[in-house]
Image 1 (cartoon, rainbow, N blue to C red):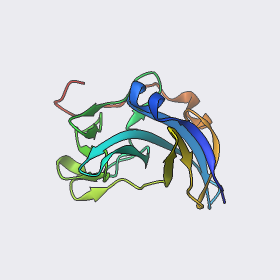
Image 2 (spheres, rainbow, N blue to C red):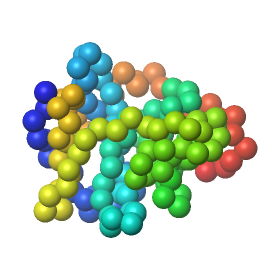
Image 3 (cartoon, rainbow, N blue to C red):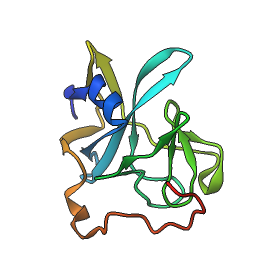
Image 4 (cartoon, rainbow, N blue to C red):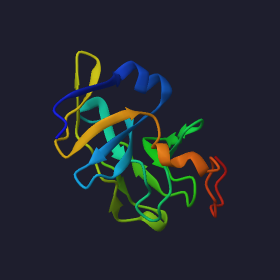
Length: 145
Protein backbone atom coordinates (compact mmCIF):
# COMPACT_ATOMS: atom_id res chain seq x y z
CA UNK A 1 0.00 0.00 0.00
CA UNK A 2 2.74 2.48 0.88
CA UNK A 3 5.86 1.52 -1.06
CA UNK A 4 8.80 3.34 0.45
CA UNK A 5 8.41 6.85 1.85
CA UNK A 6 11.19 8.98 3.41
CA UNK A 7 10.05 10.14 6.86
CA UNK A 8 12.93 12.04 8.46
CA UNK A 9 16.58 11.67 9.38
CA UNK A 10 18.00 9.48 12.13
CA UNK A 11 19.67 12.62 13.48
CA UNK A 12 16.28 14.36 13.89
CA UNK A 13 14.80 11.40 15.79
CA UNK A 14 17.86 11.19 18.05
CA UNK A 15 17.93 14.96 18.72
CA UNK A 16 14.18 15.21 19.41
CA UNK A 17 13.97 11.86 21.24
CA UNK A 18 10.94 10.83 19.13
CA UNK A 19 9.16 11.87 15.93
CA UNK A 20 5.41 11.67 15.19
CA UNK A 21 3.61 11.03 11.92
CA UNK A 22 0.20 9.85 10.72
CA UNK A 23 -0.61 6.96 8.37
CA UNK A 24 -3.80 5.50 6.94
CA UNK A 25 -4.28 1.76 7.50
CA UNK A 26 -5.98 -0.88 5.32
CA UNK A 27 -9.32 -0.10 7.01
CA UNK A 28 -9.18 3.59 6.09
CA UNK A 29 -8.41 4.67 9.65
CA UNK A 30 -5.86 7.38 10.40
CA UNK A 31 -3.28 6.09 12.87
CA UNK A 32 -0.58 8.05 14.68
CA UNK A 33 2.86 6.44 14.78
CA UNK A 34 6.03 7.60 16.50
CA UNK A 35 9.68 6.87 15.85
CA UNK A 36 12.11 6.37 18.73
CA UNK A 37 15.82 5.58 18.89
CA UNK A 38 16.55 1.99 19.89
CA UNK A 39 19.88 0.97 21.39
CA UNK A 40 20.33 -2.74 22.04
CA UNK A 41 22.95 -5.51 21.71
CA UNK A 42 22.72 -5.28 17.90
CA UNK A 43 23.68 -1.60 17.93
CA UNK A 44 21.41 1.37 17.45
CA UNK A 45 18.49 1.93 15.16
CA UNK A 46 15.04 3.43 14.89
CA UNK A 47 11.74 1.70 15.72
CA UNK A 48 8.17 2.79 14.93
CA UNK A 49 5.24 2.16 17.28
CA UNK A 50 1.52 2.94 17.10
CA UNK A 51 0.92 5.94 19.37
CA UNK A 52 -1.46 4.33 21.86
CA UNK A 53 -0.95 2.56 25.17
CA UNK A 54 -2.04 -1.08 24.99
CA UNK A 55 -3.86 -0.78 28.33
CA UNK A 56 -6.11 2.15 27.52
CA UNK A 57 -6.43 4.53 24.57
CA UNK A 58 -3.80 7.01 25.72
CA UNK A 59 -1.28 8.73 23.45
CA UNK A 60 2.32 7.98 24.35
CA UNK A 61 3.59 10.86 22.20
CA UNK A 62 1.84 14.21 22.68
CA UNK A 63 2.42 17.17 20.37
CA UNK A 64 4.19 19.93 22.23
CA UNK A 65 5.52 17.41 24.77
CA UNK A 66 6.86 14.49 22.73
CA UNK A 67 7.31 11.03 24.18
CA UNK A 68 8.77 10.54 27.63
CA UNK A 69 11.68 8.12 27.16
CA UNK A 70 13.64 6.93 30.18
CA UNK A 71 16.27 4.18 30.41
CA UNK A 72 15.31 2.66 27.05
CA UNK A 73 11.55 2.78 27.65
CA UNK A 74 8.59 4.93 26.58
CA UNK A 75 6.53 5.91 29.63
CA UNK A 76 2.73 6.03 29.43
CA UNK A 77 1.77 9.40 30.93
CA UNK A 78 -1.50 8.08 32.37
CA UNK A 79 -0.54 4.95 34.32
CA UNK A 80 3.27 4.85 34.17
CA UNK A 81 3.63 1.59 32.20
CA UNK A 82 6.96 1.51 30.36
CA UNK A 83 7.37 0.06 26.85
CA UNK A 84 10.82 -1.01 25.65
CA UNK A 85 11.92 1.25 22.77
CA UNK A 86 13.40 -1.69 20.84
CA UNK A 87 10.76 -4.41 21.29
CA UNK A 88 7.63 -2.43 22.29
CA UNK A 89 7.14 -4.91 25.16
CA UNK A 90 5.87 -3.81 28.57
CA UNK A 91 6.61 -5.81 31.70
CA UNK A 92 5.09 -3.49 34.33
CA UNK A 93 1.99 -1.58 35.36
CA UNK A 94 -1.48 -1.97 33.88
CA UNK A 95 -0.07 -2.69 30.38
CA UNK A 96 2.17 -5.55 31.59
CA UNK A 97 2.58 -8.52 29.25
CA UNK A 98 1.56 -6.52 26.15
CA UNK A 99 3.50 -5.20 23.17
CA UNK A 100 2.91 -2.01 21.17
CA UNK A 101 1.87 -2.61 17.56
CA UNK A 102 4.84 -1.98 15.27
CA UNK A 103 4.99 -0.21 11.93
CA UNK A 104 7.80 -1.27 9.59
CA UNK A 105 10.53 1.26 8.90
CA UNK A 106 14.07 0.98 7.60
CA UNK A 107 17.17 3.11 7.92
CA UNK A 108 19.47 3.80 5.00
CA UNK A 109 22.23 6.41 4.73
CA UNK A 110 21.03 8.19 7.88
CA UNK A 111 17.42 8.48 6.63
CA UNK A 112 14.32 6.74 8.01
CA UNK A 113 11.86 5.25 5.51
CA UNK A 114 8.32 3.94 5.99
CA UNK A 115 8.34 0.45 4.42
CA UNK A 116 5.15 -1.07 5.86
CA UNK A 117 2.87 -2.26 3.03
CA UNK A 118 -0.19 -2.16 5.33
CA UNK A 119 -0.19 1.63 5.76
CA UNK A 120 0.11 4.78 3.66
CA UNK A 121 1.92 7.92 4.84
CA UNK A 122 -0.38 10.92 5.28
CA UNK A 123 1.62 13.63 7.02
CA UNK A 124 4.09 14.55 9.75
CA UNK A 125 2.55 15.18 13.16
CA UNK A 126 -0.67 14.24 14.88
CA UNK A 127 -3.91 13.05 13.34
CA UNK A 128 -6.15 15.95 12.34
CA UNK A 129 -9.05 14.68 14.53
CA UNK A 130 -7.27 15.77 17.72
CA UNK A 131 -8.50 19.37 17.41
CA UNK A 132 -10.73 19.12 20.50
CA UNK A 133 -8.04 17.37 22.55
CA UNK A 134 -6.95 19.36 25.60
CA UNK A 135 -3.31 18.37 25.08
CA UNK A 136 -2.78 16.36 28.25
CA UNK A 137 -3.62 13.02 29.73
CA UNK A 138 -6.06 12.46 32.51
CA UNK A 139 -3.44 10.95 34.76
CA UNK A 140 -4.11 8.52 37.58
CA UNK A 141 -0.42 7.75 37.99
CA UNK A 142 1.59 8.60 41.04
CA UNK A 143 4.52 9.41 38.72
CA UNK A 144 5.42 12.99 37.88
CA UNK A 145 6.87 13.41 34.39
